[in-house]
Length: 98
Image 1: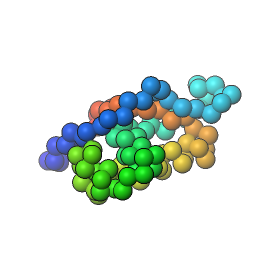
Image 2: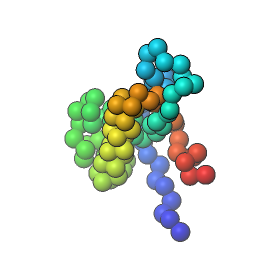
Image 3: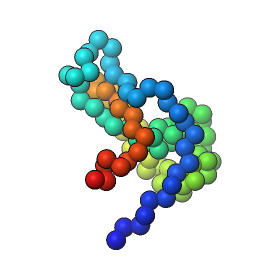
């Protein structure tokens, strides 16, 4: 039986629910799903310039967990930019676990 997921502290509130390339209809794009915890990790480390230890403390997770979220988020954003995919922002990972 896997360990239960710990609740993460997230402060970011993004007004948009997706980003897509300009001039391309949304229906013809593939989507990369970026979860709220990955977005929060990206904001704290990349946009605000915090070190991983400080960002992990703010989110209430360990540094290795933050590193995994950061790596996953960066990979998704880079893939979306390189392949021209839309980035869909999800608030929860509920759909992934079902």
